Length: 168
Image 1 (cartoon, rainbow, N blue to C red):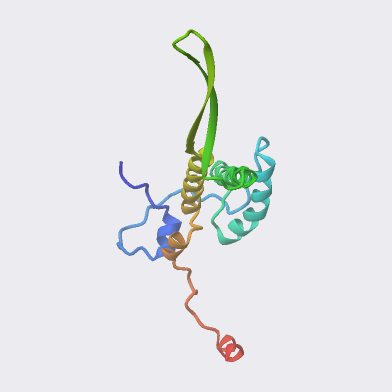
Image 2: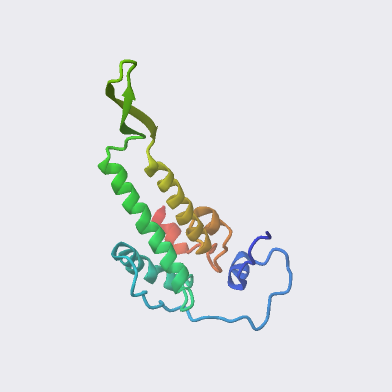
């Protein structure tokens, strides 16, 4: 499966290193905050309200990105809930499962035996999956350090002489 196509605005910001022709007539959605989906989880809704203005200001979030942005906020909310559950169980890496088995002895009596099974805490696997999902959506929106490192902001390299004076 090939890599997904890089959006044209992102190619422009990166400087188009391959110097290939940029697509013409590509849809350009407005950089406005989409409506918050009505079924969005309260924790994800709070994250939406925190991140959306900054994403719109940077031109990352457009009117067409509502579903993808909702997925990012939901992934964050899921991770927060898993971390809370992990904290409640005392950050135990191993979980015990107790079960009682009936065992017949040679003389015909039935004895009850407790079996203890030790296994990895299932929250660890859930946490890993939630982190992978969140990282995926952060990369899609260009908010990880590696994704940001590939973006060149026009005028970002200019140094203000007043800033040099104030910083010494």
